[in-house]
Amino acid sequence: MFTGDRSADFLYASLHRTGFANQALSVSRDDGLRVSDLWVTAAVRCAPPANKPTPAERDTCLRTWAVPELGLLPDARVLVCLGAFAWDAALHARAAMPGGDPVPRPRPKFGHGAELGGAPWTLLGCFHPSPHNTFTGVLTPPMMDAVFERARVLAG
Image (cartoon, rainbow, N blue to C red; front, side):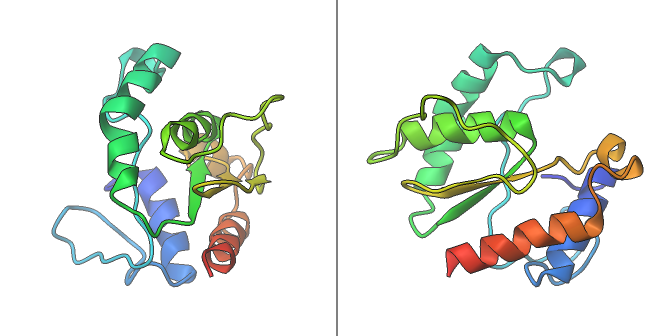
């Protein structure tokens, strides 16, 4: 996940700076990268046309992959959502988990640094580390680092 592209470069550099990764770069599956105290996954595993998944594709992928995968992580306490799509998917995933909180009404708005407590995990919003966001300064290294530092605090 997020290996060998500019988004990965930005993400893993932040994970390294905040102590979650042993190195700042990931270029291949066997490059020696090791992460600790986190799991990286995606809401949608298949890139649809124009990389714009529909809500139906999101929900299918959540049921098929994300919810079962997250169920294997009983000690998880925080989900960092990289972008609004991930935020929305995490709200639905949380509602699908046994004992999970339903999607709140009104739906909490995504934003960088947005935080939503609840069961089974707290959600933290982070702008996606896409080149569009990082090249334009919408997301800076200190901004991303702050989210991962907050996640560490919340995870206790």
